[in-house]
Length: 291
Image 1 (tube, rainbow, N blue to C red):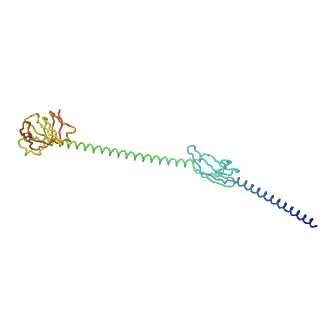
Image 2: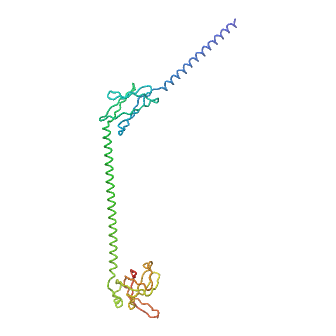
Image 3: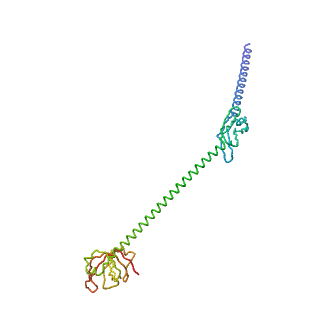
């Protein structure tokens, strides 16, 4: 009897377990199906109507509108209650349209996908042309002002250049005049006889003579030369010239030159025969070769 009761109990427990497993399997299957439906619905989520700012093309007399909307809906575009166009968005929801510009006044365009409404105000051709003309006029005015500024700058630069050239020329002329006046200041009319007879009276006086080199006495810083005024060997003086002046103008015996210098009184030297000779002396400030 006990064996029969135990067998019934085990059978009951087995059947209960099977029922429970079947119920769990059914519940899991429902959960997965619900999840799949939720995922499917999320991938087909609708796109709200959106319109970007209009792009104007005055040269082509049109404007361009673009935006996005639900691919499952139709976008209707109207203006002043009149249909312009109905557009079906592409798979990604994008759409666009090109429309002629209003002629004289701003015009409102309404877009709707049946759920959302959008309004875009489109400027007229006249407004856009006026704005373009103002921009062009401003550009031309800026170019004019720039050209005038460049012209003034060029005129100023030219004036400064001319003033600098004039100043330079005046300075050169002044220097030339000063040099000529300086040269002329040596034309004192002092003669060999003046220097020979009254050396102290004419000491440090400016003098000018032309003559021939008859002897060269080379020195380190200065060189001395016996100089026959006007080729007259009875009017010989001793002249002294610095090496700075001689660096590019080496003087040789028999050279005929014109000197300008300052009387230095008398100079005494010993001749080749052993006698002492005293002659007027001149320190040369400048000289020039004569042909």
